[in-house]
Length: 113
View 1: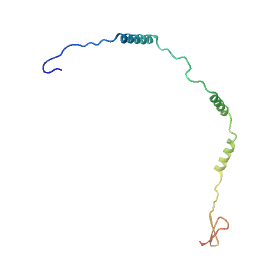
View 2 (view 1 turned 120 degrees about the horizontal axis):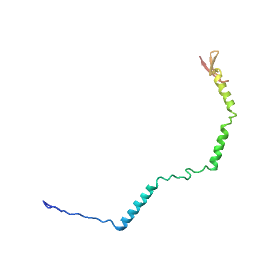
View 3 (view 1 turned 90 degrees about the horizontal axis):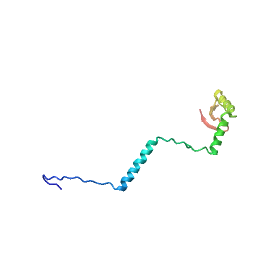
View 4 (view 1 turned 180 degrees about the horizontal axis):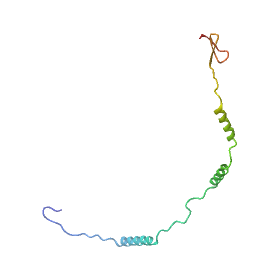
């Protein structure tokens, strides 16, 4: 510890052990060799081959792409019929002879309208 005007001077050296020095130098040499070799592109397969189920599914999709749905014209006709149909009348209550009568048969109420 230093108190007052006193100064401590000196240097401390730490030596790297020989085994660490040689291992570090081997790593440096290895990396320099890789650097000097340049980029080596991968020439192997990049994705797995398709399974038999995947190939069969692709075949089915291709075969359906050129065919037409046999129900397309039936659906087209049903939509055209619904789109061009005229208004329909729906009656729920009728008044006959002063009595209110439901549109369902045999249901008459005794109320006067």
